Image (tube, rainbow, N blue to C red):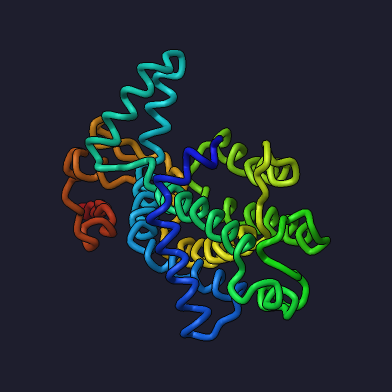
Length: 287
């Protein structure tokens, strides 16, 4: 039922992906499995502008992290007020907290559309069964058929393990600005998804090619995370400085600006001069 609901809106994306895969396989000469990997790279390159927004959002969140923690601390007993104040703070500072989810959200339609592409390829493989028997749909001589179910061959279980590890690694690198609860949820998602793959609902069958797509995009995210960690500056540790509103400055600069002027220095010659001793003159004796 879910597949039938998603099929119609995703048809244009499905047709486009099938055209790209046909070009990569027929014109570029790539095998079908490597065509999926190349398609994944193309999708991630198209999503680079969203990735840039994601990096800028991470920079803004890290830059304003101390102020947001102060708001959370101030309204810790009123969750609704806390959310309202945070939304106002985001708006005033032009921060989009959802920007970090844009690349993942943009990939979901591609993921589901690719599911339909692989399902149609399994029913009507180009070249017929002879192409399947000849290994046209295999990958590295390990995965015999990327259109088959993940659980149809032992290689599918190996890919599930690789998927979980790559998903955990990508979440680790791209969730540095999340709260602890959100980060734990993101780390648990690949495990939940793996259970869903192994025990699909109804007649849904997940082709092995879907895992090739997701593992490739996770590895891209890991590389992107390594670069992002160099681009995004680390949040400086608090130094105990007071804000300008408090009128103080622990660094000493404010004290120097507002302190009373110091007395003029005494010349060194006067400071080192010793007091003059009075010499008593001897009285001349009278004869």
